[in-house]
Image (cartoon, rainbow, N blue to C red; front, side, top):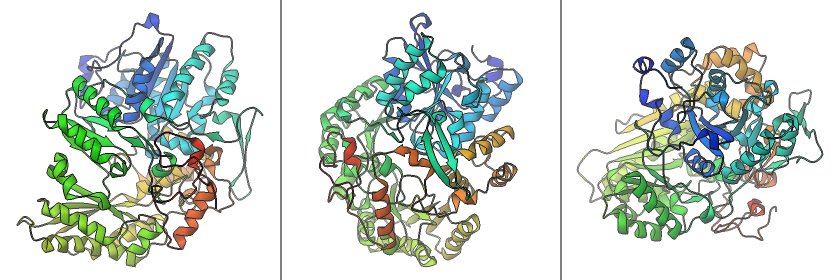
Length: 618
């Protein structure tokens, strides 16, 4: 099925829907016995930039008899046409409806995309509830970072793949092939799947609640499935599959360039950061492997920019060697290197001179908090002098604009810490004028402030978020305090952050709220023009849920948490120790300086900071 031209002419960006891109994989259906639709629950230009989909798409399509295709959330104009003309959601490669596929997989990157998942299933004609799907219906699988607490969407998933998917998707396809060509029942298939490491089958775990609404227990329905589902990791990143070709989009996408994954994990341990914990342990790729992969991708795509991707690129142990080796050929071919996520204590004149995109692009640093006290609470491990030194390097190199990222509503934050945000921005302005070789233009500092959202598997997972009115007060407070025209203050929507917190820390009872929201036509909640805070409050009232129970309540340290069913390798004891250190304003050194016994060494891995004999508790 292909969308009629008459409909494409009516919608914005028809290139989102036509398929036929260079690099897409087309297979003969007669040679295929497992069809996998990889769905991104947002628009095409966002989904096409997702590195995880690119990797897993390549892996599955290299399997004999497996064909992986892609699907994206339609924009509202196309959804209107689809519903009016009874056009089911389709895969862009073949144009076939998703309901014709064996497996429909969603990557869950952001809680505010949950309503998009339900809307896409509805548009595809696939039953929303896992309990209502038969063997003849597609198997619905979730993966991605949100599955580390997938309980708010547990009723909709047949299986959740926990952790890194390179091996998991292969094992899923092989098991499904056996299931498809046998008389195995769906219940038997799910039982088999739940025995595989990293495969979480929500329907095979009973949840009981205490009278106060907290969770009493998780109980597996079978004795041979784990009481905790341990995440999967790729132990040797050099041996991990990485695509040599990419599907090339027809329209501009968010990351329209080669993205080179340098390593996974983070050594820093910021106490608010979920990614820095769930992707542990750090596992690096060698310079030789990275250089080889970069050359192949540039040759095969024609891109003229490479982004070196990681949570903190400057913590890569061979960053100098890597950039030197890559510049030997990228300079000759006018290919630029981009290094995002640089830390202030690693930003140097040598690096700025070396990397063209740092010279020509904007400079962004993330102090996260306005005072040293609060930076110690969150374990940011940078100080004001390091920030000003990095800014001085940038100003000497011709920069006049700096962006600073902060969080508001952090645990123990006071108005004095909010004052510190503006004070730090003013110090950056003063540093510009103290720099003797600056350019003779007016400086500009842009403050971008996000609301703190407590996330699972962090030392702050027990903390309650500030209530909505208090978040708004703190944003207004900083607005009023900023009287300098050279400082621009932007902040994230407090309502969106509060709903995000509800679903980040929620349990299975939130599934009924998502169903209610879907029935009211709510979707595209990550887009400002469609999100309705009052609409979500109405939804929670309608289904009898107190959203503050999840967003604003401080969880008990001995409480069973909704995500306790998952084992990410890092221990709860470590998170508790880090929480207590935060209230003591005591910092914890990076893994490169000292092993703090988080427990991630249990997972293994090559070329990692995590020692094999590390302690797991103190």
